[in-house]
Length: 295
Image (tube, rainbow, N blue to C red; front, side, top):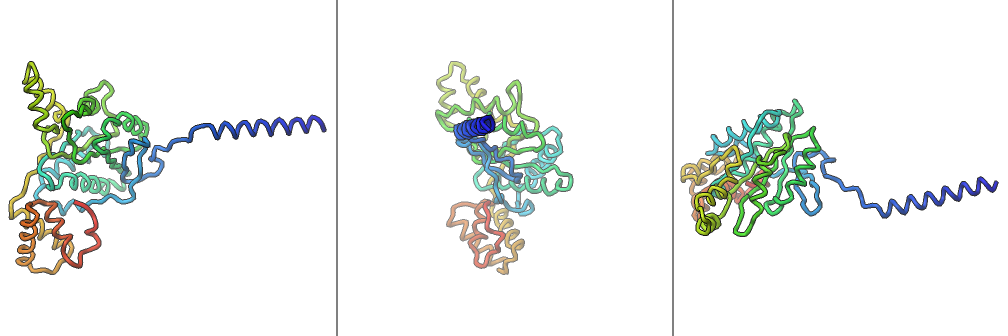
């Protein structure tokens, strides 16, 4: 009986020690990829991905006056989805011209196209201020080889005093390891070379070899294999967008009245763009539930 009691006491002691060690051990961190989602948000503070239940986007057929850009980005994304070579892409140009909308619409179209083949691609949004944490994110994604990922940074640019762009150059394609095969980078920017003009001019003015300073700065955008430019539309283009949206969502206004209201809206906003056209449609009464999204 004494031996049995001693064994029980030993087990109790070992159990208490194990429970104490378990309490002291740090919690196991979740990457966020355990939940299979179509989109994720990168949380740099938590070093994890937060699944997005529903990506806010519009149908690709509703994006007007960007036909060339659409076909190029579609082709690049299709090739990436099936494991073929593809380029990082920089979509640059005027605000409100559909850059970010096109990225999200292309992502949806390609996933729908390859749904039966099981080649779904996840879209991961990373904030510009978190670019410095890209190495951690890339390491996490490289370990998930069974999936493919588009890293997406909207309104991507750098201001004076921001040196993060220098490390990004290596991460795009200049390092000895390169980017993981299952990752591609899409960015949108109002700036063609991503850096503020005064930032480039200052380095040009203070450098011993001004030409080399400029080359160093613009080389960041050169790391993107695809440059897709977006430009402001004229009045006819703006009205074409408005009429297309109105037809798609079944608004009963007469075309002439719709154009008059749309032009008044654009004048108040001081802008004619795809975003302005979308916001005008959202302002109309009895709007469709499908309009509850962003441009």
